[in-house]
Length: 459
Image 1 (cartoon, rainbow, N blue to C red):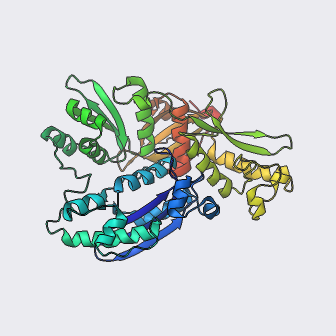
Image 2 (image 1 turned 180 degrees about the vertical axis):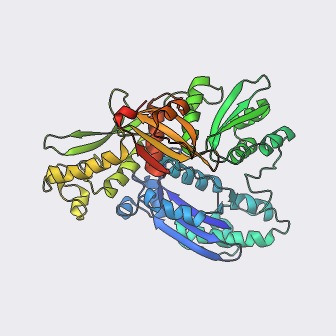
Image 3 (image 1 turned 45 degrees about the vertical axis):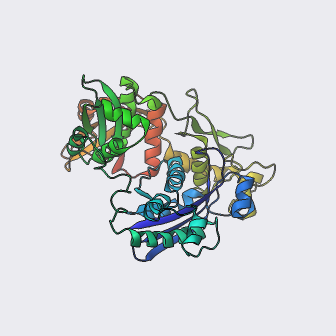
C-alpha cells in the first residue's frame, strides 16, 4: 500500500517551514482507495515568492485547520503505507518535522519518483514534475497546488510500476531495507535484539558505551541505525562491537531511563541529550482583573512550570490546542494581542473574558480544571502502566510533585503498600527533562491507571 502525497510550504529557513497545503492519495498499486486534501494554517507568514508560485496567501489560510487538527487524519490515511512523493526526501522531512513539533514520532519508508524515473525512464530532458509529466503525456492541473501535483504523481507512479519489470520499486528503492549492505556483525546484533520497548546501549570492543537510545521496538530502531547513511550512524557502524539492552515494558519508562543514563554516562554520540533540551515552559498567573492567564516563556528552573516544550513552535501549537479544548480566551492565553476582544470572541467561540464580559470566577473554573488535569504539583501519586511481562506492571512514583523513580511489580502485589514501594522503586533524578517527559506523555498517551497517594503514604 502506498500513500502518494504532495506538500506545499511557507518557504523560509531549513526546518522552520510550515505546511500550507497537503494532499494524500492512498493507492493499492492499482487504484486510489482513499484520499485527503486540505489547506493548513501554518501559524507563520508565507514567503512572497511562494505566494507567487502557488497562489496560496495568508488570507486564504486564516480559517484553515492547523496541523494538529489534521494530523490524526494524515496518520490514518498513511497507516501501513510507503510514502511516495516527487522529491520524497523534502516532503518526508517536512511531514516528520511537523509531527516532531507535536511530540509524535512519524516514521515511514519512502519512495522518490524522481529517483525512480531517472532509473526507469533515463535520458529525459528534465525530471521536474511539470516537465516530466508533460513529456510523458500525463495531464496535470493546478500546478504547484498539493492536490494537482499529488494526482499527477499518482499517474506517474502507475507508469513507473508498469515499467518496473524487475520489481526494483519494492526492493532496492525502499530506503529502510534492513538487508542493505550490512556487515555480518550488524546483522547478528539485529537478529539478537528484542522487538519490545526499552533502552539499548552500543559498546566499543573495550566495553565503553558510545551511544544510548530508546525505542518502542529495539530491533526496528537498531535496523534504522545500521542502514542509515548519516555521518554519525556511519561512524557508529564502524566502531560498534556489541549491543546490550534493558526492557522497560513501555515507552514512558524508556524515555525516562534514556534521559537519566545519557546524563550520567555522557556517551560520545549522545551530545544533544547531555543537557536539558526543553527550552520553553507554560506558566500561569492572575492579572489585575483576577483572571488566570496562561503564558509561554523561556524555561526557568526558578519558576513552577505547568509543562515544558522543546521549542517555541511546539509550545505555541500545544497552547492553541489547550485553548480550544478548554474553551479559553486567546487573549488570556497570550495567543492574540489586542486591546479589546480576541479573535475567538468575534466568531462567537469565546465567552468574553477578554473584555470582562464573562466573570473571572466562571472563566477561572475552566482554567483550574485544565491545571488540575495537566499539573501534578504537590501531588503524591503512582503512575501504573504495562510491565516487561504479561503478569507484570510498572510503577512511577511522584512525591510532592517530584519524580522519585520507577519499579516493576507482580500483579499479585499490593502496590499501595509502603513497604512494597520502598523495595521496588529505583531512585531517579528529578529535573526539567524528566518533568517534561512525564507531563508530555500523560498529555498524549493513556496509562493503565493513576493511583493518588495520601501524604503519609509517600516515601
